[in-house]
Length: 175
View 1 (cartoon, rainbow, N blue to C red):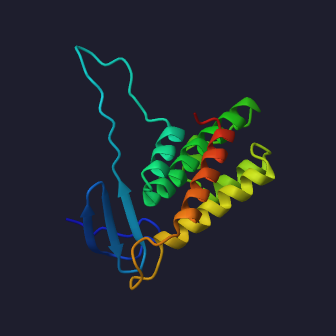
View 2 (spheres, rainbow, N blue to C red; view 1 turned 90 degrees about the vertical axis):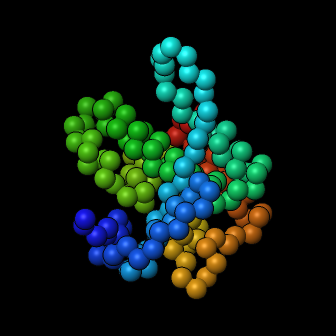
């Protein structure tokens, strides 16, 4: 079986995997860590399923605030920024008749997504600033040195960042 490489730099090798409740943390020799968060929503299934239920991003982030689950709130904020940002970019380019390979848009980094959203005037300057602020704090928390606690943030700061993320997502069309 091939060794797993770091998805960020493609150089570091997998050193350890830690599983806790709904979070799997992988550490790589390069110092990067990846976090996989599993979110379940139970639905009653009868004879057939006609739709897939995707949790409302706004509701999920509000629940994270209510449960004081800052890790989930910040990680999911970034995940939703990527998802809704990519969809907005594809929709924008399609509506303008600009033919860009959707796979290229899918491969943009979050920072690139945010910059293109702003440069195409899909989001305004305050939304751009809030998205960058949430991203930078999430990056700082996730990429802490190994000796540091796994996730340390003040309650007020975390709640404020998640609320900013909710505002940004509403501007991107999330409900």
